[in-house]
Length: 293
Image (tube, rainbow, N blue to C red; front, side, top):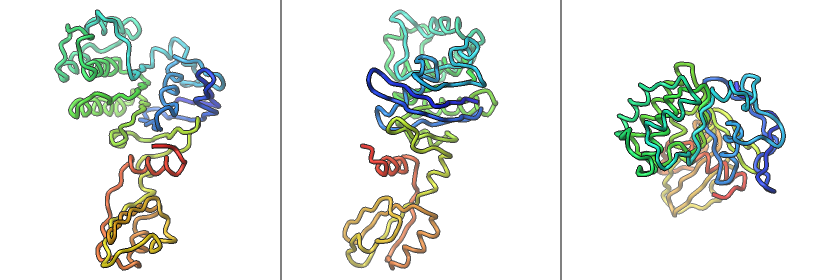
């Protein structure tokens, strides 16, 4: 288990995280969301031991991130990972083998093949997406107990994303890995994350099960025989309301069956319930908290 207690950190004079408390069970896939500058990357760097917290502590089964044993259990893939100008995928593997002696070369070669990466090619000549594929193959070859990913899907094409997600799910299902992933691609997170945290104003504002969180809201499209105004919907638990003459799109907080019944009392000519995803609930949450999106 990862345990974060009373964690605070500043970068220069700016407070980035304040009194963060969080417990992450083993074999969890946790999505970390928030607007730009919310502190997602800083939290991952603290978890990886790149930064030392100003206050509070992080424990991996009662061990510090600075403990050599813990470091061997962690693989952190930042948004812009380091590589030297002369490195190739082959030399990169050998370099990381120093820190992770049990790396799986077969997994690495298989993923490079799936991504159609030349193992002897110069990393500096690769596109951003290709470099990301190499580091993803590296992370999965390490098979770490704790995998920390910052904007891992950035630059990946749809097939690369699917290969990556399938490999992560396999690691977790094998009982080997806990994954923490910060991303702006909320639809990607919804596909395979168990839980999420929303960081804003230096603290965790929301957390929980993604499916349950999405289930708090329901969305309907309605058509009326005559033009309507916001007054018609007064008293409903509205999260979002768009009216265009006779046509309405409304997002409500509450059980969908109950909300459907209440909307039917307004006598719409047509009413359809629409699917709602994690990205839409995120936008609702940040607007409710007064964040800028």
